[in-house]
Image 1: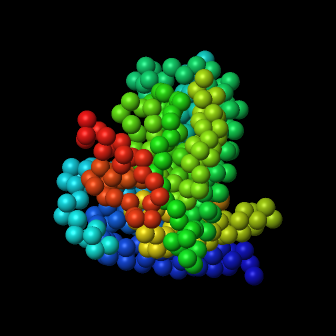
Image 2 (image 1 turned 45 degrees about the horizontal axis):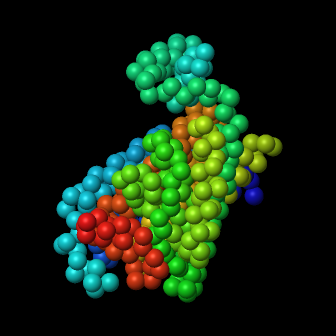
Image 3 (image 1 turned 90 degrees about the horizontal axis):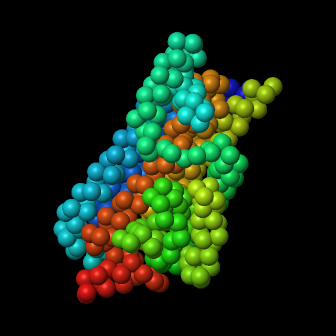
Amino acid sequence: MSVVAFVDLCSLVALIILGLALLLSIVRIIIGPTLSDRVLALDMMTVVAMGFIGAVAIRTGLMLYLDIAIALALLGFLATVALARYILRRGLKVDASAMEAQ
Amino acid sequence: MNSAFLVIILALGWAGITGNFSGLNLLFGGLVGGVAILILRYSIHQQGALRKTAKILSLAALFFYELMASAIKVAVVVMHPNLKSALKPAIVAVPLTVKSDAEITLLANMITLTPGTLTVDIAEDRSVLYVHALAMDNDTALIADIDNGFEARIREVFK
Amino acid sequence: MIADIVLCLGGVLLILGAIFTLLAAIGVIRLPDLYTRMHAASKAGAVGGGLVLVAVALISMDVAVSVRALIGVLFLLLTTPVAAHLLARASYLAGYRADQSTVRDDLKTRLEQNSGS
């Protein structure tokens, strides 16, 4: 098996695994149960998407995708910071019943 | 001498990021780096950074080793069939001996990325760091681990 | 010859990074409360994302791309713990209590003392 074919196979396998991880993060975003859990899952999803874009960059050979991945990581960090501030301001009172159910 | 060295590093970093190692681009990078250092000259008064390179590198090596160990440990816990028995979460107060902002930030970041620990909060008087542990068997061992590992190395680097 | 080894190493690192990311996602699903989930997301997530970027750096075979990818790794390692810390602190102060299985909570005693005095 040639090296190029091996790398191609690796990127395909990585894309499948990362797709599964993306699906699991989305499940956590849907089931919650509180805002904090959803923000955490969103953060996780950004990292997974970043890995996904990295794998796509390797598969297509277009290294411009790398810039998108780094920009996405930056965006995810800023989003988490902003949402953390929001949680601190608003509190989790609305989610109290969800916490009890848990 | 120190800031000249920094300007060269920044120029090389600039050329690396823009992907163009031509003379003009290097010069531009050096110019931007020089302006940045001029603006930040009151914040970076760290003397003898070169002398400490070995200590910084040893801290970085320890950090990467611990990072891999922590990822593997979390992976093992996550895949444990009986999750409840593998977990023993606790929030422990760890007394701090480092005092400056930079040291505390570095320590808190490193604690978060090392096996089974996560920084949650810091006391107002900066004497205690509240650390969440994934599986705490023995609190004194946990505190001693942080104290002798990263805290001691960070103290050496910043001394 | 060396180029082949580097490419193979890159491929292996890519799969390893993907597996770590998947494990982090499984942790986010399986673990009982926010703080334990945060362990999985911050550690395994950072390592997984970082390994993928290192793989890109190796496979690209281009200095400019490699430097950018390594800067990306550095950035990821700096920001992930900060984001985790901010979210944990905000959630704790907003009233998110840890799971019942938590054996000890020093922070809770401090907050109670503060509100009592």
